[in-house]
Structure formats: structure tokens, C-alpha cells
Length: 131
Length: 148
Image (cartoon, rainbow over all chains, first blue to last red; front, side, top):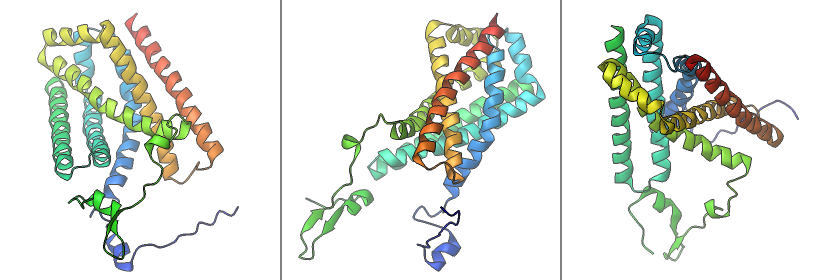
């Protein structure tokens, strides 16, 4: 089997130049989902090992750990990228399974609002401890 | 049979040349699909674990907000997390998180264009399942050592 890839062009030249499909934003949503997942890989490793190591530790130890500038920075990144990834992931699930257009739109807006709300809440908690 | 004002339904309904409305045939769907084969089973599991993880993020928010609120609030959160139900929840979430992470890496591999042949799909599928078990146990091993 040869490694040569055969590309069949199904899009019109104008469609190809604009790079937009029926979603009107091309592959942007899909690509951001991949980029955020790659960013979350090292963050996830760090977070799980850190929190597992914090098991059974005191309130003061936990506050000291969250308040450390490096931990606070990585926590803020995990929260921001994590909630972004979650919001767009849940959006796809809703888009796939909710049939009624109005219900679908409302659910996506509610889901995104919840992600922003809890994301800001978590970030504010980190900042309150660290700053 | 009526044509609904719904984009998805519209694509499923057509008209014959004489104008009569006809429902287009559907391809084999959930009812005839074996959801327990490793390919489709792991595919839907990736979605389910992602959704569970989204709900699980609420525990992270609770933990952080409790820590920021003071010792009493933090003690309440710690009491829940060290209770039997709390431990079951955290153990489940750790397994779910590792599964979604490893299956996500498998998806990134596919996105890069590798591993599409069936033997490789089955091999990486088993690797994800074994990896989930190993990493979940390892996570709790670290937690138990930290606790002791």
C-alpha cells in the first residue's frame, strides 16, 4: 500500500477560500476543541498528582499550596481551558441529541452560562487565596 | 405525514415526482447496533465520561470556593470528600477523568491520521482500558501515601 494520499475536492473554489461550512465558522470549533485538549493533557497530569498528594493535608497546607504563584497560575489555566473545553464539548452533545431547535438553543445558552459562572467562581476563589 | 418546520426532519422527508410526501429510509440505527463492541462502546463512553466530568467540575469549584471561604467551609467540604459517598464519587471521577484523557489522546492520534486499521483500533482500545485502570489505581496509591 502506498503512502500517497488521494484528496478528492468536494468543495467549490469559493467555499474553499472562505473555509466556512454550514456552521458558518468552518472548522474553528473542532480545532479549538483539539488545541484545548492538548493544553489540558499536561495540566491534568499536574492537577491529579498534586491533588492526590494533598489528600489528608490540613486547611493551612491546602491554602499554602493553592496560594503558591506557580500553583495558582496553573490552576487558573486549568480552570479557564477546562471550562472552555467543557462548554464546547457539552454544546456538541446537546446539538447531537436535542431535536427541537428552540430547546437546543436555550440548552446551549444555559450550559455556556453555567460554564462561565462556575469558571469565574473557581478563578475568583483561587485569586482570593493567591493574591 | 406532514413536513415539520425542523431542519433535521426536513432532510428526512422528500417528495416523489408526483408530489406525494415520502419519508426517506434511515440507515441502521441504535436498535440494531451492537453497543458493546469495543469500537462503538468506547466511542459513546468518551462522550459519557466527558459529560460526567463536566458535572464533576462542580466538586472542584466547591473545593476551591470552600478553601477561599475559610476553615469552617473547608472542613465541611473535607468532611464530604472523606465520607464514604464522597470517596466513591472521587474514585469514580478519577476513573472517568483518566478514561476521557486517554481516549482523548487516542482521538488526537486519529485526528493526526494514524491507527485507523481494525487491529490497531482494537489494540489502542484495550490500551486505553488497561491504562485507565492502572492510572486510577496509581492516583489512589499517591493519595493513600499522602494521607498516611
